[in-house]
Length: 244
Ligand SMILES: [Ca+2]
Image (cartoon, rainbow, N blue to C red; front, top):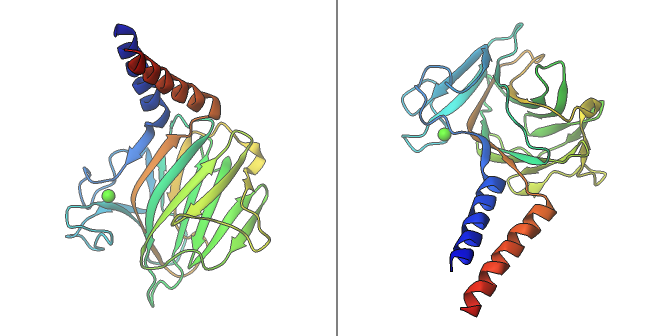
């Protein structure tokens, strides 16, 4: 019996290790009107919002907080929120929920998502949403996929990246595919050991931009061999229990 208990415990530990988040933030413990406490650096208009702030948190319910990234006037400066020294797994996933406000003042809000090494000069993965279109970094250029982003609504984004310097994107559960059928994209300069995450907004557009992040999380994706071991471990538990 001791042995089977040990196997169960080992399996549980392994599964917790495989699926636990490297970093997870929902902003709900942050103070509205201030910067998120967990971020490393902030440039420009980056604040935590809720039901009482201006702008109002678009996600709700009333107790929810999210992060607003705003560039209301034209001019220089790129609002950026950066999390550094993240221990990104070799094969992992970034999951986030975002919302872009589109109105007369800000017809084409822009949300930029970067996975970078140390600073913005070393981009591994870049993904822009401008208006309802996506711009996907693919090595040295960008591929455009039109009409995939829902404005004035919550969108879920999953970026799954692989150890061979490629990645795929899922938006609201659907894999992002170019008109040519491409679903796997290349890292810029094969920068694989990235360690920072940055959200930003419009850099060159003259009109304003207002986007929100409700939450984000980075998790490791278990490799097949590790998963097999886990299943094998569970199988052993089954055998022990059946034999008793
Ligand atoms: Ca939240």
